[in-house]
Image (cartoon, rainbow, N blue to C red; front, side, top):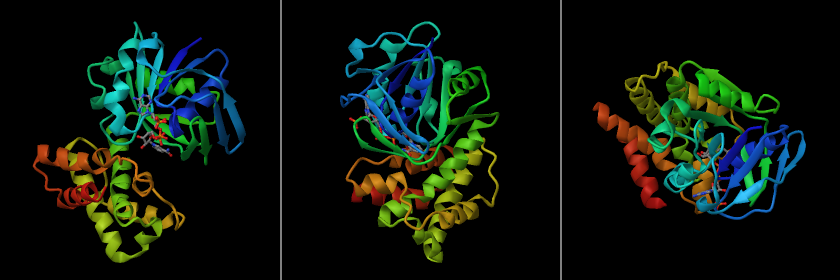
Length: 289
Ligand SMILES: NC(=O)c1ccc[n+]([C@@H]2O[C@H](COP(=O)([O-])OP(=O)(O)OC[C@H]3O[C@@H](n4cnc5c(N)ncnc54)[C@H](OP(=O)(O)O)[C@@H]3O)[C@@H](O)[C@H]2O)c1
């Protein structure tokens, strides 16, 4: 039996908690900010329900085998307060968040070798506390090391496919190249269709090109064609697709702007690589709110 604590049972946390709770023997605990009664996840295959234990105070937490963080990136400092009381000998930490700084956000709390950064592609939306619409089965990518393989094994009996890679840095920066361009949609509050406009597509290519340059300096192996691939990907999306930065801004919520674009500017400065387009969009979106 594995004890698994999910910190942040929102769209992603609620979905994976519900699936893990279906697995025989897993004891799932939800570490929540807002109380919830149960999980009801509308999945592509039908409704999946679970009634895990719910904690709302880190003082109630006891050690588990796996801690899985699924808060938004900007809630990482508050999420980190759960980690010490949930940790014991052998506890592993999985960080299911956007960006490329999964380990850095929780540095020093769990050994690096026991920390699993995960790239998440599970389209899901929270409709109320504990209620989620999961639009597709979804996938995750984790490093091909002992902890990454153990994390992937947790999902073996679920429809969520977790694959491993021996080059996680490249996989994470590749995803960031796509996400960085989505800041244009958030700024204009217009969905994916705006990528059909060649002027807009050029701004997206610029954001993504800076990401590619900085990612390469960080050790990622990214092809020069990636910015064009990013634009092609936005053009291939349903015209009314709304990315999460756009959705958060439209709803008046905080945005993962620093994790998606600010990081390109910060890492660019460290490598003396100019990132004026990302800096401009960070300033504009930061001011626009
Ligand atoms: N949703 C997607 O389709 C998707 C796809 C790919 C990647 N991601 C990434 O996955 C991560 C999670 O996104 P999400 O969409 O699942 O976000 P979400 O639906 O907003 O869920 C985040 C959850 O964290 C909770 N939380 C915040 N601070 C907390 C704290 N201190 N202790 C306990 N719980 C706390 C929130 O509580 P409240 O209920 O109080 O707000 C909320 O339930 C993000 O980095 C996102 O970019 C999401």
